[in-house]
Each structure stands twice: as structure tokens, then as C-alpha cells.
Image 1 (cartoon, rainbow, N blue to C red):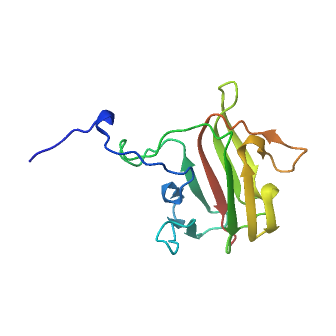
Image 2 (image 1 turned 180 degrees about the horizontal axis):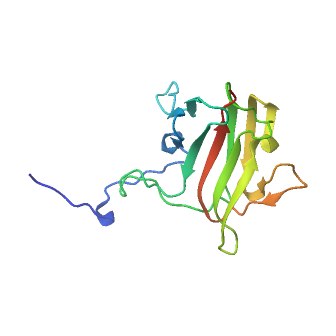
Image 3 (image 1 turned 90 degrees about the vertical axis):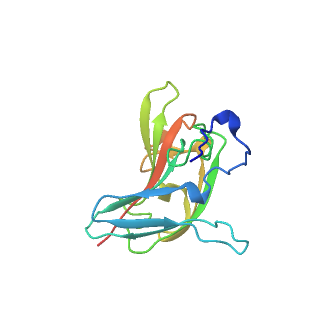
Amino acid sequence: MAYWLATAASRRTTIWVKRFDPVYWTVDFPRPTMAAVTTPMDLAGGPHGLRVDAVFYRKDDLAGLIWASVDTVDHPLLGYETSRDYRKTQLQFRWRSAGMKALDAINGPTLTIEGRDAAGVAYSWYVRLWNYAVGSPTDAVISLDFAALNGGFALPGEAVPVWAGDIDRMFVAGRGRL
């Protein structure tokens, strides 16, 4: 059987992948919660957004939608480029939910950002999505500008500025509301 050990130098083509491409998000959860992330297709046949379906069996079960700056799932020659600097990045999405805690709840959906602060010290920021939402607690547009993003519950009083220059991963966590 013939084989070929590919190296980075033998890469045949390079394509551009937009940051936050829907097909590269993953989902994680503890048992007995069940969850799946899918990418519905648009009319042109390409991925159009994300859909997370989750089943929560206990009160306060948790599921998280994850974006990693380093692609650890795909083959090194096929994965997306590592880029931990999000300072010039904006993310806007439509949030629609049912059967889970609403955006405005005390323990509502949160964006957790893991990385390092400007001094290189490991840090985690907790961004309350309701602070960046326009709409209702179950149907809103959320706009995140990483250059001006703040963690904390009540803004501006409890604001903890996010330094977006060295992010390892981020995840949106939601809880069931049985």
C-alpha cells in the first residue's frame, strides 16, 4: 500500500476561512444533558448560521457552544489558521431560544472568554450577553465589538474590560430552566 507523509511545505492549495465560520463551532455538555450543533444551509447550499438543540434533564444543566482560536479537531494541513488576536473583530448574531434561561435572567446565557490579559497573565472574562442585546430576552440581536467588550454583570458599574489580543477560546453557555 502506498502512502504519503504530507508536510506543511507540500500544501497544494490555500483558501480563506472567515473567522467564526459556522462549520467550525463545537458543542460540549455534561451528562445527562444532550446537545447538537448544526449548520442549516442557505439557498446557495452554504452554511447559514448555527442551530443548537439541547435537552436539559435537570434544573441548571449547562451546555456550551465553543469557538477555539486553535483548530485542534481538523488535520493540521486542513484546519483553519491560528489567530488569537480579536481586537479588530466584531460578531453579530440573532439569538432565539426556548426552554432555557432567558438572556435577562440572573444566570442567563454568558460568553466566557479564556485567554491572557495585556500583561500575559491567564484570565477569564464573563460577558453577560443581555448587556449587548437589542430585543426581547428570547429573541434578540447581539452585537459584540471585541475592541470595546466588557465582562461583568451590571454595566458600566461592574465593567471588566476584555483584552482581546490573546484569546484561546470562547464559549456561549446556556442553562436549562426546568
